[in-house]
Image 1 (cartoon, rainbow, N blue to C red):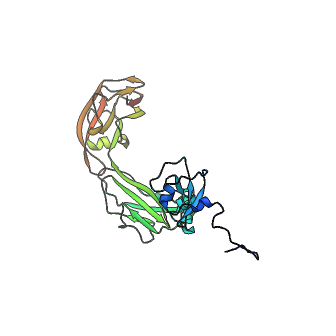
Image 2: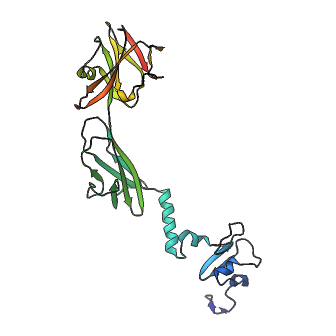
Image 3: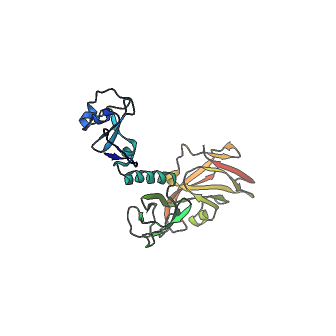
Length: 285
């Protein structure tokens, strides 16, 4: 008997539609042959299933699928559904991380990596519950907001992962070590390492190309462009002076000691004849 909150009881069958009581096992669902409409629901062993004739046939339940609240949670309890709702909110309001550290350094320099980070959610700063760098807690501070590593002198990446509650955020911090390339003018036909470093212009040697750059050759000077040997290919290297291709170049290989006292192999390139005035020179295709 079911008490309805009034002074009478309802003594009818468990289901208003007796077809809902026909399936007693999952095999009954799989072998169902009674005509029912799409969306028809029935309960087996305390779990509700819904009839989905347009879905793929299941070897365990035929065309029946667990009702959506059960599918989301993996259980029929409220806690499972709440967990899925929490996961959805984490997607909408993710944990974000901002890092400080890393950079580019000249070959030969030794650096002690120092990385710090802040994390936030919904615009509010929060404190991490766990923190890892390259999968380890070694070097991570007690407050889980910074990391100090061992000294390095080669390019190294640090994968920072922080956790807060059931969320996590990741970011990679890089310490890159590179050669420089040098450019400028001189009246000399050859240069020492010190003279190359003092040409007046330098930038990181990430490629052999360089956009149009001003070279002041007033009084008669050679424009110089000095790049690591690994970047030089005589068959593809091109020089453009004032927008016109110039093939009169001299290229020699020599070892150069940089400001960090690190020795590297370079190709020293200059025009074959002295230039006068202020020139716009580009190195590239």
